[in-house]
Image (cartoon, rainbow, N blue to C red; front, side, top):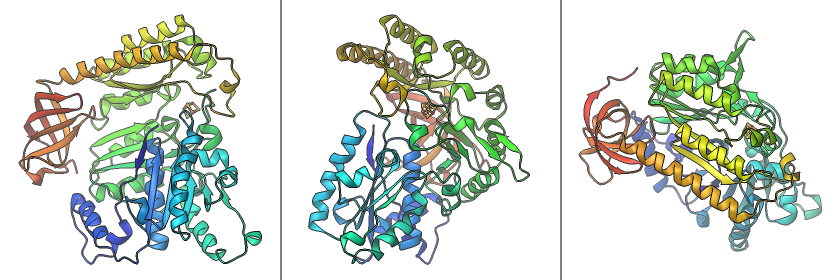
Length: 495
Ligand code: SF4
């Protein structure tokens, strides 16, 4: 689990400035500058984001909502905040304990400042509900991923009952699943440089035996097609060039069209690629069963589709996949990747792996190891299995010693890391398509951008090119994730 501070953009403050910068990078910088000069009376919001990109997206949304409704601006310092929000993740080991130990630190801040408001959202909140306030009574609000849009109302309710005696106060806990409502109440999307994360669906109906997502985020709900397209068109007009479509089971998207028909994920991708200005499309997280022929054909037809795919498989053993209730075999996965690589031989592949799933034998593990070698993964999110309360797998007997699991995990991570190093090394002399994002922090004549395969590429150039795509020949490998190159061509603006 990653724990990180959500970096502010202080949108509300930026909107109060008289002149709007025209360039996206200027807009971000202006937002930070504005935040630096905030009136000390301005209320400040601190958000700690745990876990996945969906949570990062949700944290941005929380900041937007409270900025729009109550004028809150973000801070990176919890000590100066008027509201502390913890956006939790329950996917990894001991998630609950990590939440409560974090809340314990915040309790000390509340003791110094009794007006401080503490809220807990995300998947742990959804799972634990009002038991969070039983264990941590200083928490003022608990909300789930599906009800974060109600934060402004919860905040109003909190203020309304501050003076009331404890016996008359109602608990502010809302972890319901109001379907699509969350998408309806969100403010306009925000420009963040040249990349944007767009949530297109929520929840998951796959019910893998180890996973809490269907219980914490609810069953799959897709945003209506027109809403998604309108949001991305707005982002493109504001300068966004790369869009990352988000959802727990993103390629299971089934959005309703204006005419009441259902649009598949592959159809959506084609429509997004047709939006002027969108030069690159990524998506996360996808499921092998939903990785359709039509989606593979998008890679054949659309240059905007990056040669980088995160397609979680979890295990390379059919026995384990069955116990995980993944509903597909290894053969299906291999066949789909073979088709994809026939179209895009340079496809970089990443996956999630759970090692030490209950009942995983040494033979099962060896199958996974061989599978990883055969498929040549570039990256992985790999972890030792940990029980998630309430999931079917948590009832399964687990007799594999912890030391064995650790050794297995270390071995597969070593194999994948070596493959990743090899792939970076293989970039030498190749031409990469790079989205130019900024001037180098250390060398003002150098630019920095991202290649399709997510490596950072630095090369000499003009700041005027920021926000454009360039073809860059790779001339030097600096680290696993950082390479140097020289400009070959600057693509004219894709718009
Ligand atoms: S497909 Fe992914 S999100 Fe859905 S239940 Fe399985 S692991 Fe969880």
